Amino acid sequence: MVTPISKKIDATVRYFIRLSYRGAAFHGWQSQPNASTVQQTIEQAMSTVLRAPIAITGAGRTDTGVNAAMMIAHFDYPEALPHDNVLRIVRSLNGLLGRDIAIHAIFPVHDDAHARFDATSRTYKYFAHGEKSPFLYPLSWQYPPQIDFELMNEAAATLPQYTDFTSFSKLHTDVKTNNCTITAARWEREGEQMVFTITADRFLRNMVRAIVGTLVEVGMGRLAVTDFGRVIERKDRCAAGTSMPAHPLFLWNITYPYPIM
Image (cartoon, rainbow, N blue to C red):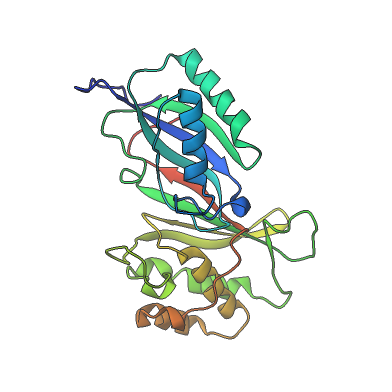
């Protein structure tokens, strides 16, 4: 069930797209000159299928190599699309987009719905495994046997106490604030893997990979749990750990204040 469509003066209809992608083939989500991106690839395919220029807006900007198990984007179309047409459009898009992007659903939303600004939370997962595996790599990071996940969770538990995460942000970005509200952050075992799950209202560029890299410093005994908080308080990217590889990171879930498919 989705929020009912209301009439616009220009009669355009806003649609949400639910999709997923594997990030290895792309230079991130956002369109950029002379680089293949997820946004640009989808826009080209949609413009071909719908025979009109289509621009989409995503719920976030994943970095180069980062995956999305769930991404939401929106676009406007001059008229309402019959349900059968939408199903055909989804099939056509999936035929054009290749193996790295999957369109799962396209559905109408209310006129003012915004994939990015309306999102109330985003959840990322970072996957790691202990024993060497040719099947998990490269979508999972092999952690060293001496790493201490209990210490890492002690440090991770302090994240919701802070709001300014400049220490975990990529330098020289165009954002107006480095403040984020983290509501959950924890390593847990899922099958044969250890998975770091973190939820916040927003994330900075490179933020999750920098957090995980700094937690690894704690887990390896190179940084005390108490010093983890001091890294955040310094508001200095040079104080934090190295960014982790991108391929084990997934944008996992996005929530909105209204129901979506």
